[in-house]
Image 1 (tube, rainbow, N blue to C red):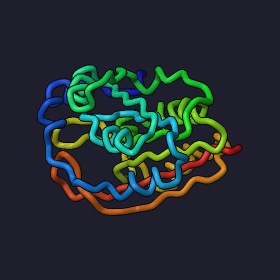
Image 2: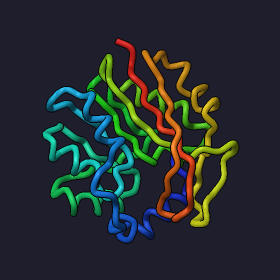
Image 3: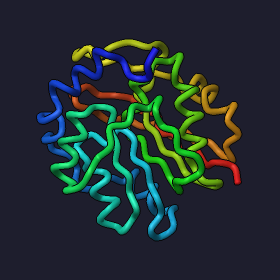
Amino acid sequence: MHSFDAETLRFYTREAEAYSARPLPAKNERLDLFIATLPAGAKILELGCGGGHDSRMMLARGFDVTPTDGSPEMARQAEKLLGGPVAVLPFDQLNASGIYDAVWANACLLHIPRCELSAVLARIHRALKAGGIFYASFKAGEAEGRDRFQRYYNYPSRDWLLSQYAPLGWMSVQIDEGSGGGYDGEKTEWLHVTAVRAA
């Protein structure tokens, strides 16, 4: 099985322009907290960059950002915003080793089939430098399922998510819980995970 559900990918192919054009808050507090921990000019990989808004914020603050998305159509939308290349990178094709100070994966790994998540987390762990920081967010739940757009979600519980991170030898894994929304307009409980690779 590939690390991106075919029906979910079709959604982002079809809705790329509308998804990228949706209004977003001018301030992203979680992104601010994330980059506050990084050295100046840090090398950051963004997975699932969508329309490119988070990459734009990080680039504006002087970071060396590599924006990527698994959907060619979404990548093209991000290129329009960023004025530069955006790589098409399915999660299971990340092969970097020890080159990134940080990985930002906001609301994207939640689409990885449950049976594939641990392998993708291992690829991200390998891509980080010692002491590198990794942020990801997930819609909380107890069992995998689909939303009203037929997008697949792994809907993890806190304990299940910890069990996927645990084997990799992180120096720390912190999970914060919070309420929010998404493209579907539904109130959502989120799990925000920040992990630090052991030195």
